[in-house]
Length: 174
Image (cartoon, rainbow, N blue to C red; front, side):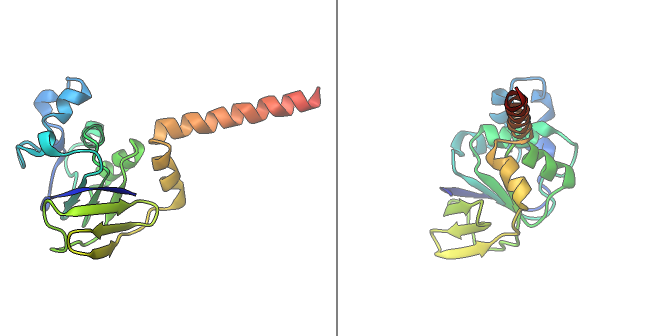
């Protein structure tokens, strides 16, 4: 569980707003410094570890920029809760280890509210308003992937385990 502040946005936040095209060739830290500046110029300079984005429909629409999810993760965003996601953004977020949940939060969370995101329990608690919101849970295998830090670290862990098992089997035959 992580506690932070809520950053609340509406519908149709696109990947060009999350990862502006003119910074795509720059290192992720530079790109992240411009994340959402067209929507909220203060976002990148005020968001911090544990903060949660709450949004409307179609979050992450647009091009398939993996950097859109990477920028949010680089800024310390604990997760995104939206009414719906663009499919490619949703998958990219999971692949980089950024928790994404669907829920219709409505007006139960306001910008700046203190919130706690319980990834394993699929809950968002508005600490300011004393409200608990159930999120659509992620399957166990996706939670494991997120907990491992994303797809690449998850696969590295899995392959290392497989290699260790093969070595142990080989040694037991000797």
